[in-house]
Image (cartoon, rainbow, N blue to C red):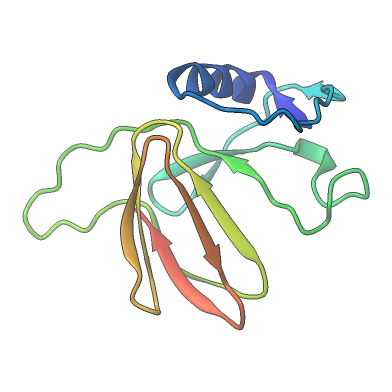
Length: 138
C-alpha cells in the first residue's frame, strides 16, 4: 500500500469516524513506502485532484490498470436558477471499473444508461464501464 501523507490524514479521520469490523481472517500488511503529496491538477470545471501514486502510476510496481486520484473536499455555492452544476462533464470510459469513495461531502453521478445518484460521506460507488459508457460527476 502506497499513500501520501495527505491521504493518510484523510483516511485516518475517515476510519475514526466510521466503525470498521475486521474479520479474524484478516491479513495485516505493512506500509511499503510513504510518498510525498503530489501537485494537484484541474479536472473538468470543478475539481482539483492529486494523483496518489505520483511517478509510480503505470509502472510494474503499481498495476498498469490502476489510476488513483484524490480530490480534497470542495464546497460550491448554491446554484442559481438556470446555472449548470460544476464538475467533470460527460466523458467516456470503456473496458475498466471506476470506484468512487466519498470520505466527506457528496458527489453526484449520472451516466448514459440512466443511472443517477448522489454518493454521500462513507458511500462507495462502483461503475463497470464494460463496452463503453458516458458519465459525469458533479
